[in-house]
View 1: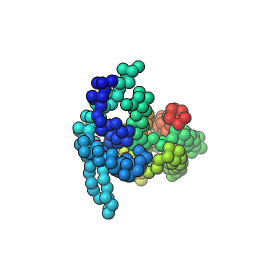
View 2: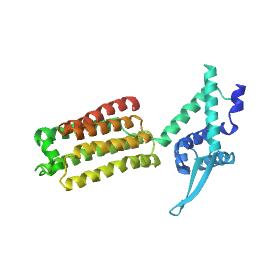
View 3: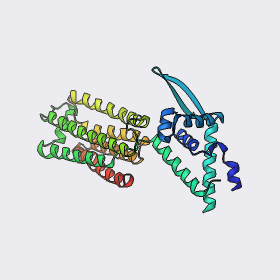
Length: 99
Length: 207
């Protein structure tokens, strides 16, 4: 149990953050609306989780315009991918150890 | 402190998000079965009623005259295509509605892009060949390009689609190698293979 907590990152305690990381791990980029649609959360809630992950440098942001509308796309960084994979591994280990 | 149950749920939720955000999962097995039935019906009409002659058709590659029934065959092919695409569209719409998702999303667009590039280029090539009167390889070419389209789009939907694409390509090459079995290969590829895959996927994913 102890080793799991060491490896597991504090940033991944929220289910929504795990969801964001999961989706960005398998997509090149996703925009705010796509993330929102899959996670079924409010704008403000999603924005604060994204900000937290951005602060850890686990995800990056690309801002651009589609026509006149601003479009914000998110992607996973190399650090983020590494941390996410470590977290998955730790989860697996935990479940294996409890069987 | 989270319990084991929570972690298991986390993992299953993550897996579902990964799949839903990267794959087009509204594809319906029933649409495959219907497409297969249309194709078999079309192949039957071509064979029994319009009396499709594979060797006369193949001879056009070497400059022989086009069989008189060409227009009926093209019309028949287009009809089969329209019915198959129509059913697939309607059933996918229904499926995505059931999953409470919009049918038209980035995943659908990506899936269609990878499907349509090989498919449309093959379609245009076939139309050019028909216009030039060289129709001998039209049946195998439709199989080959359709197979390539499925193969390329397979990454963005259920994994089975990739192998269905490979089967279509193999049947197309066989049909090109031996024109007398062209229509048979076409019936197996567009008819039988669709029905078998459709039933399999319906039971695997839609129940």
